[in-house]
Image (cartoon, rainbow over all chains, first blue to last red; front, side, top):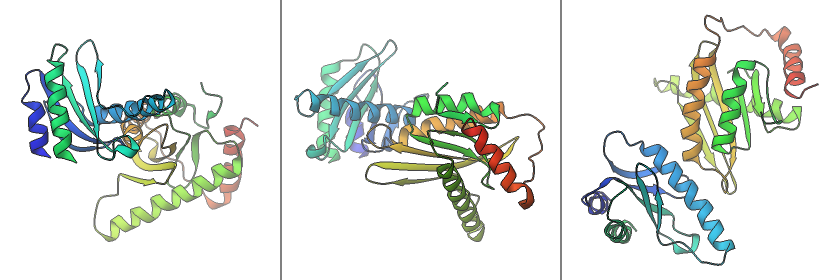
Length: 117
Length: 158
């Protein structure tokens, strides 16, 4: 799991990476810079993932494979992994600077998700 | 204020109202280890409050005793997760004495992570709001039923 998170945190502009249980919003593994509240990020990511999954199902769009939440002071990037049937039971999460290379982080999140399963 | 959130001791009301909104929990009780309810949210019947408070107090007592048997500090929190609902029970000390919080949440609306996160905020706000220098009142068996009735009348606006 640590190796999976290493893939993400070595990208410039990434301030931390986590594996989060999508079901209960708890941290499974984390590599975070000081000052990032892992528990809060995990709870937020799982809450959003659950709501997004239901919204996408209702809209007939299938399950999400990547999502990106841009804030004024940072960005949250998430790839659900694990059992595809329930929309992913592990979330691979990156916390990044606002101007991070989104494409590169997405690529590493997808790689990390493959390793994390 | 949510119409379903009521407090016997008014200083608990705002922190509890915030917790209910932010953690999206369905039912909450703030109680003492003896089962005396200080505030509730989401309950519609007095009998449910009485049962939940008695059961929560019993769990706090039994896990506290288990910790003592194991020569451990008291357990901080207990979580159970079912198919559709989860419940979270935790206790902390304040100027009002030890208080316990029982929260029940729907798994498709909230999560253990969210409840834990906002419980920490609730506990901190209740500690800050609790009356300073207040000596926790002993509830005697002879007064318990009258106090319980009074509390339930307040909690259900009778």
